[in-house]
Length: 484
Image (cartoon, rainbow, N blue to C red; front, top):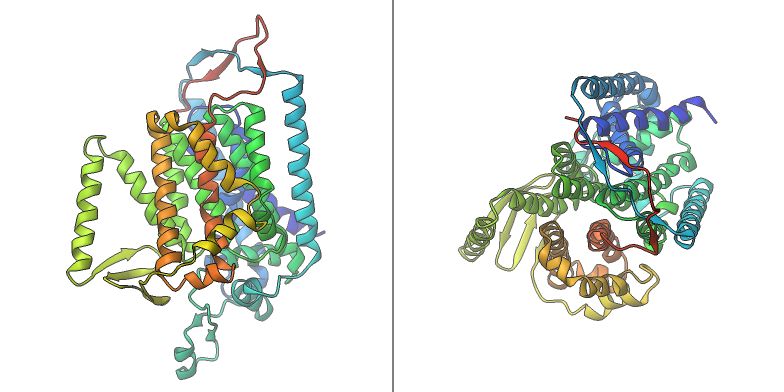
């Protein structure tokens, strides 16, 4: 294996963990896992940005061109983080010793960790043994990256009508010409480091994304206050979801990256809700704004996420009133002939009574489509989700009081509710009902919100322990109150 390919993993990890450290607040349990997991995504996004700006004219040398820039950026992040940590006075506070699980709970933790690693190894082996799966991943998502690597430069993609009418030989066309290009540049980054378009080595990025997100989620849940066994149980439940594993093993789709990025944004924002760390608020909002750069649907998830973030910043007594006023204004605008709204990544979307027009995508007629049976089969009968959609409603019922009393839990519940309402409207009132009838894209869209569901589940499980035993006379631990 080429040294460049190993550096293609190491450099983004160093840069991303440096950025995470710069944005982190108080040190908490699980920070190392959260830093490494989130840092890999942040670093790869930086690598894609650098390659897209510096290597459009020579994609074969994308790694060699962008790697020094990424190294400098990473060193800058780490330098600022270290200088800040040295200059800021750090107080200390005596924390009560964490409840130590007994032997049975520790054994469960190690067993679940072994199962998570087994899942990741099997997924990685599958991804490394096959080319890009010959469906949407092959015909839509990998096309740009592969073409750019084979011709040695990033020629622009335009609509077919413009391609037919144009005389510029560098223009290219594709049915999905307007898809976001961040993922393509991540593929170019790894392909360039591998010495050429080597699909198995490129595909391993999906295994890395799955592993990084599971690690980031586990570390964040520990920072939320979950005990090690409960956090690992959630990590195993996440890593073992069949559809999530399929998207990592049959690499090439953008859905895993979109779901993980939305999940990371939700984790960072939840840390803000619990601990008021301003850097984590910035991280959550920044990741949410990146969603449209991964996939077009990311514009909707970014909008819903932003709406709840804004609502949280409003005074408690004014939030519901302002939300009601906005809802009434939107309804009046739609009934009065239509409403045109700006959406990041999509442009100006026009919503009128009976239709939604998305520029460059399609116009959707709003009519009722009875696809309830297909959706129920997808969620409860087919082997996509294990027992997720059985267990999650049960958890809501059992922990209902926490959902009613804890503001952070209520805000996350509102975010999940808004996501579910959007999916309901999409599948039952637009032509996307065909995706539910043939059991294809419906589950891929549901996958996008699953990490948010897991974050809500983690908050509902705070305070739950498995046979904890606090040793008598346990040694006090000291942790910094603030990093500035």
